Amino acid sequence: MALEALPEAELARRCRRGDPRAWRELVRRFTPLVYRLALRMVRDGGEAEDVSQEVFLRMHRSFDSYDPTRPLAPWVARTAYHACLRRLESSARRPSPTADPEALSALPDEGARSPEQAAAAGESVALLERALGDLSVQDRALLDLRYREGLSDAEVSEATGMAVNTVKTRIFRARARLRAWLAPYLARGGA
Amino acid sequence: MTGTGTAAERCDAYLDGDLSGEEALAFERDLAARPEVAAALGSALALRELLRTMPPLSPPPGLAARIAAALPLGRQEESGRAAPLPTVRAALAGASWFLRGPAEAVEGTIGPARSAAAGLAQVRWMLGPLGVARQEPRPASRRPIWRRVLGWK
Image (cartoon, rainbow over all chains, first blue to last red; front, side):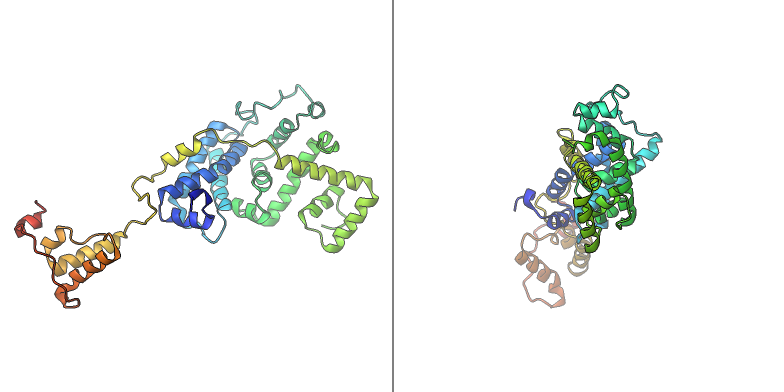
């Protein structure tokens, strides 16, 4: 069976045995998730790349701690989430929403337009990026894992170490803040 | 979440499947009767759709390859077959030394077998001095014992 089609459980079994080809496949499959989450949290392309590399090194060192009866994505996300938090703590600075000019180049100039004007111009994604930048790092990660990566509340809980009810409450509050920010856009049904 | 929450709270609970059957029916009745509930549900759906369909933040080209290259993978077998356990190898080497003497042991007669049959033959040879397996020993090396002990050709 081609490695690309290998079920997660078998891929994990081979990784546990130290098969380099399985590890390369694991990296190929999960780099997008790790990089997206890192970029969402640290808001800097270079740092997101560094964190991604650190995440896979950590996973390689501690693969024995992975429970093969569980899906891989939450475990990978948990490693990435905590690596990002450590990175942010060590850098001791609040991430800037416009820190990465490449990834966030679509953002409109702050102050140049009100949310209403931006919505009217149809810049929904840029508006959402800016609204997400206004949330805490943890809340951005929760929304990313829940909606972008499609994890369930229980899996998000596993990835972040928060209780399921905490996850639900935080996501609800984060959505409420986004709704308030995006009200003009959403009132038109997101069209 | 009950019917007493705000419209937004009820919409989220409805979409998350957190309402009981009765609460869901009540919500659906409200949805038909109250335009503000319908508007709130529309906003909630639009926001979720926006979050799900944001343009992907793709990793830079080659990032996965660079990460894989940085992992310490090189010394393991490409075939996916696990390397023999060091403890088993050490035990076999020790038994070989004890049963067959230093010359045979240092010559490397005990080691990973290429097949199950070869492995079985190796174990039988090793156990030969105990009389467990009656098999002729391997042909003796023509090298003097001191050369074999020192590993000289």
